[in-house]
Length: 109
Image (cartoon, rainbow, N blue to C red; front, side, top):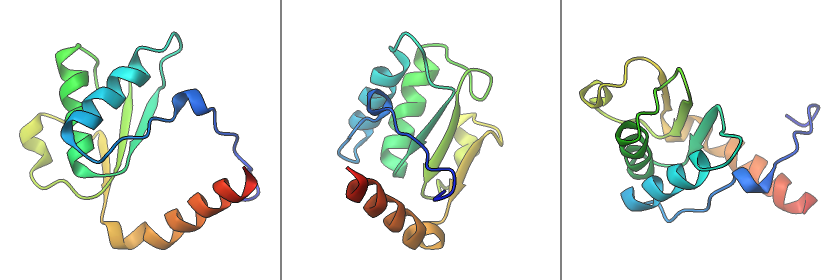
């Protein structure tokens, strides 16, 4: 990531409050853009389920129209009719890397 030095377009960043409603609103915010994102990264399970609800009720197909990556491990995700097109992770596996990345982004301003 350091070598790639990715640029973050702030219009595609939504700061939620880790709730279902926040995930729903975040998906609405992102998918209402003129240029929709092709993937969404979400920081917890509650927000992920809210985003999935938004996408489903608005007829947005996963992964055909948007891919989802979530920080957390959603038990029984198959009950949400999301086939293996949702990437989840166990939090402890990536916490250090994510913390370092967030710190780097903020330090760069």
